[in-house]
Every structure is written in C-alpha cells, then in structure tokens.
Image (cartoon, rainbow, N blue to C red; front, side, top):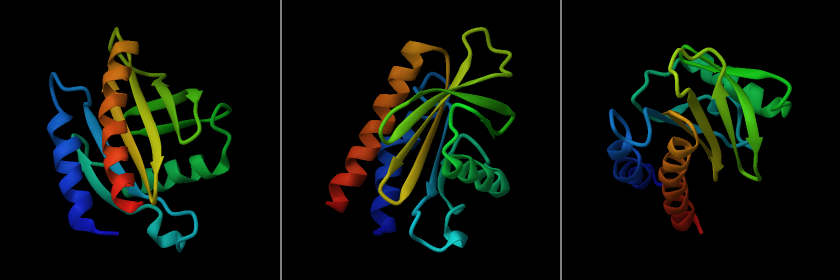
Length: 146
C-alpha cells in the first residue's frame, strides 16, 4: 500500500469534510485485512475529529468479525451504536444514547485492506451527505489499487 497516496486522498476527501458544518463530525481509517496477522488489524491509519482508543477499535473489529451485526451493539467514543442497515461492503448504525434531538449516526465501510468509519450528527439527510464523502474516498482508494 502506498501510504503517501492514502494520506493524500485522506487529506483531500476526508479531512476537509470533518468539523462543524461539514458532512462528518469524525472519521477513522483502520487497517483491516482479514488475511493479515492479527497485530495489524487494530492499527489506526488515519483519524480526524476524534482521538480513537486502540483498544476500542480492537473491540469494534471483533464486533465486525463476529458478524452478528443486528444482534449486538458497538461503541465508538461516548456512543453506543445499533446497526440499522447492512449492505454488501458497508453498514449504518444509530447512536442509542445520544442527547442530540436529531440523533447521531455512523457509517462503516470496508474498502480494500481498510475499514472506513464516518460519524455524523443528524438523520437521513446528514447520513446521505456523510455517505457521499465516504464513498468518494473509497472510490479514489480503490481506483488506485486496481
């Protein structure tokens, strides 16, 4: 993997879209290669808008690997999430303990040897804007690898 390229695409696609008034409130890029040694699975490659706990990310990867997405919940930061929809290479979740009236959500997307996580505030419209940003990043990353 060309880390310089990953970082450049991250800066262009993700960093500029995280923060107040932006589609994402936070984003994480985790190494996720099921065929790689387990010690590489929880590496946080990039993060923006959040200071992720590596132990928490290991637990998130375990949650994903158990593949009981609609039977269990997962935690990122202060929020506990419940999966609301599952698609081929990504899934969406809503926070169960948010104090925000419009709610909070997460989109988790597998892209190549990475797992991309986008957190957003709001509901359907906010989720759509967040998905556009994540999908653009994924497309750029996959285009380089093919």
